[in-house]
Length: 281
Image (cartoon, rainbow, N blue to C red; front, side, top):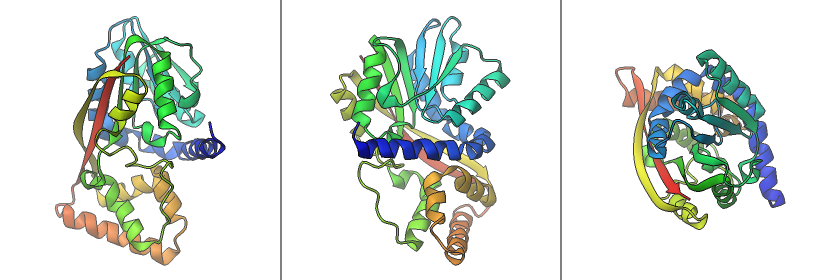
């Protein structure tokens, strides 16, 4: 991998390790929010009892842990770049009494598995963070058995994801942030219709399908929304870290106004939209 891409990977690793505490704190809310997408991934994979499944960029463990509960004689290998996130996976597995999992800290672009190892691969909101997305897709295909299935998800366009644009849009409006390079990780990097499908095709997959899945971030209060976003959102924290106190306070006030206008009853439950993409080897 090119030096620049390696640098991006190391930045990602450091960031996810750093923010693991926030993800642990907000795990219940975030996992409820992302569950519809995980359920769609699972449904598309059509798993069998004895399948060997790889869950990539799993964060705190989903959908890998849910998949593990469905495999009577199978196993899930759960991977992430950040070891601190995998610690949370192991804690969650222990709490739920799930034993048919293994955690492996690794880079998706250099998977430490033999060719043709897995029956299915899940990857919920991982691609947008991968420095080299085509290489990542090719690695997934390499470790997948012939006839094996892959399902992944990415965020749809910003207009359909107010749950993140409410705060990021306000930050961008108030701060002169330089645009990241095209190859840099980002929320909507894969949002273009057919983007991942094309990637899957280039990687050698077939029978590719794409489905839109909606969800709701049920924060309940504006306070909870602000706290969650500023404790788990690395780009948000990084941007606010460059702002002086007055600008930070202005951004916070404007985000609160935006949400209070949209949810006058005080129940902050925000729409989201993702794309789930499926392919076969």
